[in-house]
Each structure stands twice: as structure tokens, then as C-alpha cells.
Image (cartoon, rainbow, N blue to C red; front, side, top):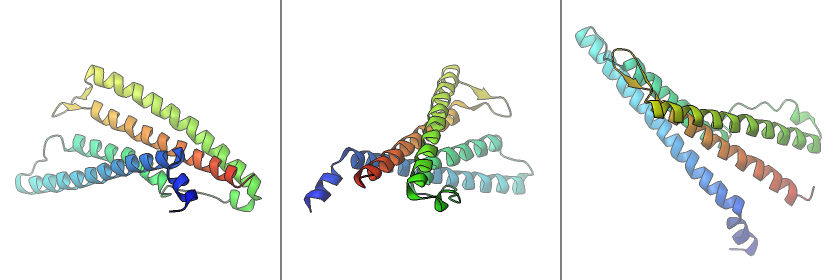
Amino acid sequence: MTTEHALTTRSPLHVYGRLVGRISLIAAVLAAASGVVLMIAVVADVATRTATGGSLPGMVDVAETMLVVMTYLGLAYGERTGQQIRTSVLTDRCPPGIAFTLRIGSMLAVLVVVAWLTWASIGRAVESTASHEYRFGLIHWPLYPARIVVAIGFAALLLVVVEKLWRMASEKHSAGS
């Protein structure tokens, strides 16, 4: 192992990146698992409808919750791996310095928005948990676990955005610009 490689693997950015990578991967696995749970629940509901003519109580609630888990826990992994929608029509046509400025500016805007979403969703999750918020229907379905998942999803996304900004700044710095 070269000295440069050893220093790079011990840098704070590398350590932070590995931590964020693990967090986003765990969140993505949980998101995928919720998709499997949703599939099983839908198959069970269809089988019950076929056999009895009626639906399983609470299936809409289960489906909504699993969709929340799938969506919000998948955000960080999608952003980290570049699977989110990207449009580079403008920056591809700009000189490198201007393109970098536009990218860093847009990532700073994303940081502000995601930080605000994280803060707001954490506050809402705390309120919901404290009041044991639930939905009236055929069954009493708790809403606070889904609100906690939304907060966790945004927090994980925030960690990824911070990592991306840190990487962009350190790459620009190491390039000597």
C-alpha cells in the first residue's frame, strides 16, 4: 500500500464516506425488504378476496406504510449511487470552472432544502410519537412509525448531500483550482 493510498483511506472524508455508504446501504436494504412485505401482503389480500370475497382489514394502511418505507429509505442510496434523475444540459455546455460553480451552488441549495426537510420531519415525527398518532379506519393504524421513517430517510439523504459537497470541495482543492 502506498503512503498516498494509506493517507487517503484514513482521511476524515474517506471514513465519513464509508459510514454514509453503510447507512445508505442499510436503508436501501430495509426499503427493499418493505417491498417484499408489500408484495406478500398484496398476494395475501388477493387470495383472501378470491376465497372469501372480502379484503384483509388494514391492507390499505399496510400498503401506504410500506410505500413510505420504500420511498424514503431509498432516497440516500439512490442519490449516493447516482440513480436519481440528473439533467446536465446546462453544465455540460459550460466551461469547467462555471460548471463547477453551478454544481456546487445547486448542491448547496439541495443541502439547505434537505436540511430543512430533515428538521421539519424530525419535529413532526416527535410530535406524532408523543401523541401516538394513528388513523381511524377498520383498524387503528399507528402513523408515527411512518413519520419516523420519513425523518430517518431525510437524515440519511442529508448525510449523502454533505458527503457529495465535501468530495466536490476536496477534489477541487486537490486539483489546485
